[in-house]
Amino acid sequence: MEEKEKLQRNKSFNGLTAKEWARLSRNVWNDLSSPREPHHLKHGAVFPLKLAERIITMYSKKNDLILDPFVGTGTTVIAAHKLGRSGVGIELSKDFVNIAKLWLNEIQGGLFNQIEKNNLIYKIINDDCRNLNRHLKKSSVQLTFTSPPYADFIQKSLKDRQKTHKKSRIAIDNNSVVKQYSESPNDFGNLPYDKFMKEISNIFRKNLEVTKSGGYSIWVVKDYRDTKNSKPYIDFHSDLAKAAVKTGWLYNDLIIWDQNEQRSLVLLGYPSVFYTNQNCSFIVVFRKKL
Image 1: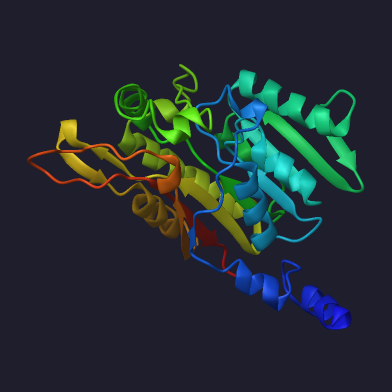
Image 2: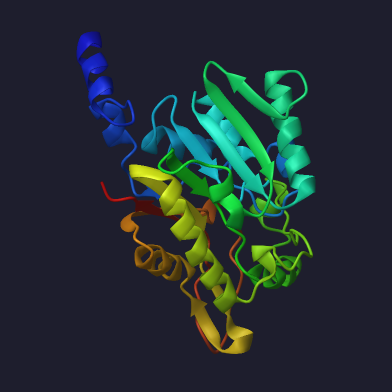
């Protein structure tokens, strides 16, 4: 049995056995809730370390290079480190960069700037992700895993969280907060939606250049409502997919991250218009053609 599993690991692109491959192939996930890491608390929207670890396990193998162009406080790079992959994170905010470097320093020991260990490299780069091609070689990245700012939705979320979600489990038990990332005009989180989508398209083009043939780019996003501006539903994950496909990516898969257990239900539109609670995120999976 051990010999069979060894052959399977060598055969699969990600080092998974057939049994592990099947177990991870569910397309609805509801088992990812976990207390936020201390380093997450100063950031308004982070995904769990467990989520990054699962994605990296599924879509890469040991010694591959993992990229996060909106790395925030460093979760993706930390997960890459834990799983024996190289990790590069790009972040506009100096404050978040310092937190990410501190986190890496804690798990490595010593002062962190750029770590090289066992031929693996870990970098946290303070720059605009629009410049990602300056920091990465063409066809060098196996997997990009990220969650971008959601245009100026963050401003709406600030008001929404204050009114409707301030007593939800995600806010209390998980210490979740919503914060504006910065006041920089270059920050994707301060752009109106139309301009945001144009900028995202440019990121997809550059991301495609640095990705290996057959490599992946995976984005965690939420859809939104803007009823005050007569937009009952903003299908962000579909708009993201259209932008990626236009730049040459294959729309490879869609995973639903069910977060209903972490959020209290709120009464929306009552009594005139029925709206469902948007208590899930979408993990949108793109792949570069071979």
